[in-house]
Image (cartoon, rainbow, N blue to C red):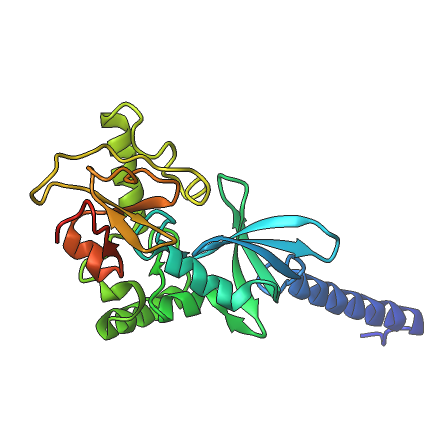
Amino acid sequence: MKPLQSGQLRFSSILRVSLYLTLLALLFSSPASSSDNNFTGQCIDVADGDTITVLTQTNEKIKIRLGGIDCPESFQVHGEKSKQFLSSLVFDKRVRIVPETIDQYGRTVAMVLVNGANINEQIVAQGHGWVFKKYCTAAHCNDWLKLEATARDARIGLWEDENPIPPWEWRTQQKSMHNSTGGLASKDPSPAAGASSSITTPIASTGGSSAVYHGNRRSQVFHGPSCKDYNCKNCTVVLGSIQEAVRSGYRAHRECVRE
């Protein structure tokens, strides 16, 4: 067998190097290792417990839906507290966004990090939201479910209530109520509209356990159907009973609610 000539040796070496560089390029351009889509910005608004707006370094405003979790809607019990908790973690702070997808409302579904801390995870761990099992399918979701169970056992956050209603069930109830009452319920119970729309609950009969009460998010006072302020601007928290209202930290309006 004849030995390779110098030209052939050079060609063989160049070929090996080219193949090596090609493999490296493929490795580092794979989706699993790429962080090209990550970006940082300042949180300039908190709409509810799982939705924020971020101002990027190029002055672009991007609405972010925290992925893998679902928090009480603004009109639900604990909705305002969930929003306040998220605000305490991210508002006016520099955040890193790790996008996952774009939802049907045009929001960027993402992980939100502050100084390396995973905010999505903290919300679940501190009892201010649920793991959104319908959409949370990654490996870390099992760990989040354990954190949720720990928060529930410790009765912290929304778990102070014995039977908190998951937001996806609440939205279904609101949609059903809207359909059955010809539009008297909230106009759009979807997550996209929940933070800004107003709600008018059909007035139930007074007295007994069938009465529906409205809690004022600002004053923490709740009103019965006979109260003149039953449908006030901030009376957007729907409470199924006096007991639920009291457990949620509301006090009765002294003139129209008898405890």
